[in-house]
Every structure is written in structure tokens, then in C-alpha cells.
Length: 161
Figure 1 (cartoon, rainbow, N blue to C red):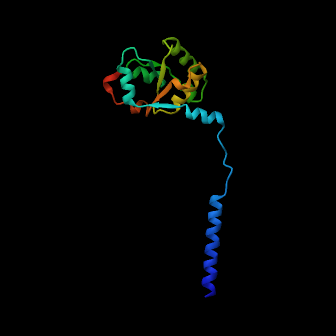
Figure 2: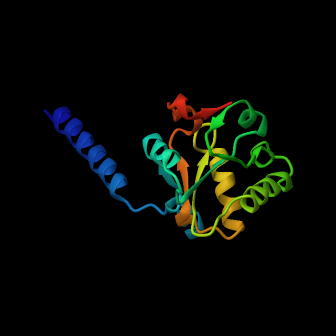
Figure 3: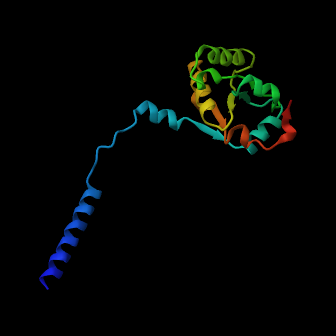
């Protein structure tokens, strides 16, 4: 009988220590406020939404294809502008990517426009281009990324080669 109470007591003490450990406040590292703000400002657009924009005349949006220039030259969405940012993503010199974004902005009527970024999968190239656009003075609220990137684009009738 004593063994039964002893075993039960040990089990109860272990459970109490587990619950106490789970409920204890831990000081997990917090992301810097700027990092949280960056994540909050990253916006996505679906392929269907972009299709509507691409087929509109006089759209308030500009599509920047931020993939490698060679891939843009092979195939791209109608009306998109090449703005290759590969040099940042491949950890090389940032100057070529910055120059490509500046050139694309200079060739585009950007007054009052919103930007949709088209990259391979909707992540790294878009993040790099977003940073460069913001450096160029574009408000983060006016920058969108195609959800799923070029892989998410299924409207082959709106492609140019």
C-alpha cells in the first residue's frame, strides 16, 4: 500500500512540476520593432487579382518582374517591366539591382501608382525588391507581391515571349 501512495505522490509531483514549468513566463527574444513593422507591411496579391489589373487599361498598378533579366526575356506577363534584383539575392554587389530598380522606376509613370512584384516564388526576390523600392521613396503600402510568384501565374494567354 505504501508503494502505491509513494508512486502516486511521485506522479503528482512530476505533473505539478510539468504544469508549473509550462505556465512559467519565459523571456523569449522579441524581434526588433522595425522587423515586426517590415513583416506587417509585406502584402500579397492573388493571380486572379493581378489578372484583372493586367487586363485593365489605364491601371493604377505597375508590374515589376524582379526575376533575372534572362528569365524575363524568355517569358513574362504582358505589360510587366523588367527590374532584375538577382545581384542582391545571390549575395553579390547590390549596385546592379539598385540600378535596375531605379531604371525601371525612371521608365515608368510612377505618380500615384501601386507596384506588384513578380518573382520566382513570392519571397526572396520580392523582399529584396521591396527594400529597394522603399529606399527609392515608394511607400510600403503601395507595394504588393504576386502570391506564389511566377509559379502561381496560370494565365498563359497573358504571357509574352
